[in-house]
Image (cartoon, rainbow, N blue to C red; front, side, top):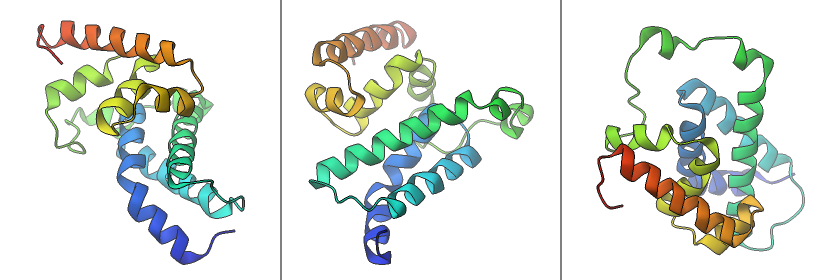
Length: 159
């Protein structure tokens, strides 16, 4: 179990990353906060030390992605409708360009993680392959296909 100072430092370093990954997957602020708590609870309870800061960040990202996928697969999630959907209010959680965000969110799930890690977290393809457990060439292919899909959705602008 980690001490309070370690946990507070981790939250300061990775809070934005965890929230952004959750919003890309879940598109819901309340679910994002639930996953945020889950990720950092797992961090608190993990007693094995990390090899490096990069290993720690990769672990946080992997746990976040897995927690989002688990929530999306849950029975409760598949049989309920969020208040955001009912109210049809635009999501104000991301200050970025709404058109680009909508295009990224409309990508098939296999592309979202790769696009997020490459463009927002600035990981290289080999680093992304390690984080996601995919072949480096697969990551390059996913990035290429995602860029093509985004280009088509955004009207042919270069990315």
